[in-house]
Length: 207
Image (cartoon, rainbow, N blue to C red):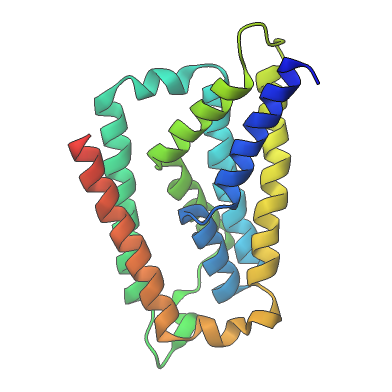
């Protein structure tokens, strides 16, 4: 194995750990699959991946690194992302009542895509994560096509990982109808969005 191949494998390993670990993107994919089925889960997944690949390409050409060096820009991204998460928390709670259940929160596939995209594109951790992946995988002496191979390779890995989330959480084995109509599911979703948003706002202001 050459050093370049070892670097790429390390970059892929970092991506796999990040993509497979529980996070806002995964949680949103899972919640859409549980509450509204497989097509909605895949729509959110498409949005998350589109945003992720946007940051991947920017990192590959070096623009993400420039953004990180601008504290005001990173703070703005974090605050906007935090406000959006708080808004999602309020919308999730408002659009559900025990008597009507999940039908109150029906969202179009385009709406699910938009939600996934915004959650990922407004996540400062996604920016830093992709900078790390590119920095690990592309070193001095790496071939010119190394960033492209990493971006495309992570795209394939992401499709596999997130598709597994959709298929798992839309499965009848999980009794998703009961979960989707439960008050606990909505309250948990509201709490995760709300607390994550508030933390992101505070963290961005203090950075």
